[in-house]
Every structure is written in structure tokens, then in C-alpha cells.
Image (cartoon, rainbow, N blue to C red; front, side, top):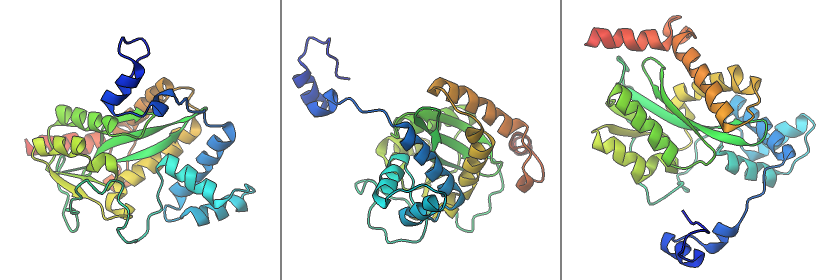
Length: 273
């Protein structure tokens, strides 16, 4: 970290860290209330219509009385990490230097806990500002094994969530992600390789390959986030923590024959022991 109080000049610190001085001196402007409100609407539209691109989201907003140009929608979608899901040519990976792994779950029967885990990142609006949420889920039981909140969409908070899940529950056989740069990074995939976990990645633009995590985001947002106005990251963490405890231990899932994720995960694990 560059520090003004260090004996080493700021210029030299930036050189050693390969950070432009302009980046150090730049003070980002806070996102305006109008922008935050627009981002929340875009998030709601994307959650309902994940196949909508910037043009159709612009139309959706205008139908609801919000005049906005497409470039603004595109900029906000980039900030939120949103991409329309539809078949498209593989032309622009988030980081083309990172290796992309094949999708291993097609026609695979998921029959036990810790056979397949999956993860994704989503945008979380707050009263002032926003954060990003990552969660690690067991596919068989839909149980949320670990999660993290961050105000930056980087690799570190994803890796922390992964390491916590492995430490608490052991290593899964397969780990599935999308092709986001956070999950294709060496820092993330190295953790999987160290534990001899098979790496699976969704086809580009195929949200259905990670459909259970997408359903989790819908539940989190409609049952928790959209009902609250988090005042701070601390408030968001505390409230989301309470929700995930409820989601795992109390919320019955129709797709699980009205059972909770906790009961399915632990009961199946006992039978396997």
C-alpha cells in the first residue's frame, strides 16, 4: 500500500508497486443518488430478464418513465458487473491470459453433498452506494457454504470465501464457475488445484449452466436486499448473515421436496459416512 507517511517518496513507492501516481492521487467521486436509483432499477430488470442487453434495458426503463441513453445503461451495467445472457461468439474474455476450463456438469447426475460446488458474484444495492456479494453453494443441497461482501469486484474476497468453505466442509469433487476474471485467475484456480478439485466453467453467456446460484440471487434480492436499505457494509454483512442462516436452516425449498438445505446436506452426509 502506498502511504504518504512512509520515508520512501510516493513516487518511488508507486514505481515499486507498478501503480501510476495518478491512480494514487485520484479521489473517486461518490456515486450520485440518481445513479444509484438507476442501478437498482437495472438490477431489477436484469434479475427478471437476464437475456436483456443494454438496448432492451433502456427500453424497459423508458416504459417506466425513466429517460436514459444507451451509453449510460452500458456504463452502469459494467460497473455492476452485469452481462446479458444469450449465445454469443467467444470474442472478449475478461482476461484472455487466463485459462478457460471445460464445462463438466452436462448430463452429470448430482447425487450427494460435496460432489459439486458452484459460485458467482452479484451486485447488492445499499441506501448509499453498493457492494458485491460472492457465495459458495453446494449443488446437491443448495446450501450456502460460505459468502463474502466487498466494495470492490476483485479476486481476493472470492478466494477468501473459497478457502473458508474448504476449511469448514472439506474439498468438493468438482467446482463450477462462470468465466469471470475473478474465477479464472491463478489465485483462485491455484486453490482448487492444491486440493485436487476438478475445475468446471460455464459456457460463455450461458447462465443456465449455473442456474442454482442464479436462483439463489433471486431469493436473496427479493426476500432480503430489496426489503432493506443497508446503511453500511457492516449492516449489509450482518443482515445478509442472518438471511443465509434462515435460508439454510429454516427456508423450505419446493425443489428439495419441502426440505431445508441444512437437513438435506447433513442427512445425506451422515448416510455417506
